[in-house]
Image 1 (cartoon, rainbow, N blue to C red):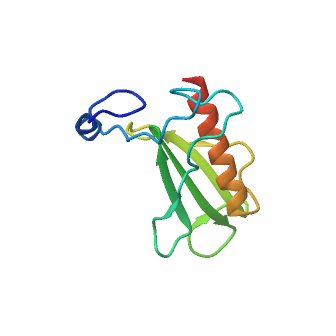
Image 2: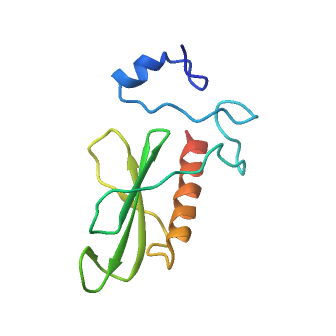
Amino acid sequence: MNCDRCGTIFSDHVVTRQPLHTPLPASGCRPAAGERLAMPLEFHHVVEKIEIWSATSDGYSFVISFESVAGPGFHGKPGYVASWRLAYRGRGAIKITGSPFKTFDEAKAACDAMLELLISEN
């Protein structure tokens, strides 16, 4: 069976560690500028005692972490810090402009917008 988006055989996605794609948007393989993604990122809490969440889509990895000036977890300016990187390469993450955000929902929306931008540029 082939991937609807790129035509790759599903088993090849597993061998090459490429993620399976979300359903195609109505306009074709990549969303047009301003067109919403078929599915927003789904973040998962990854560490029990630290506020950090991750999501992966279309070859990109996103992380949201909560920073505070004291206490457990990451220290820095209080708020939700969002970052992204290529999912299957050993490179550092890039902080998303606007971080730290006041709420998790604002950070998540910034990640969704960044994913749309990254996809539209490729």
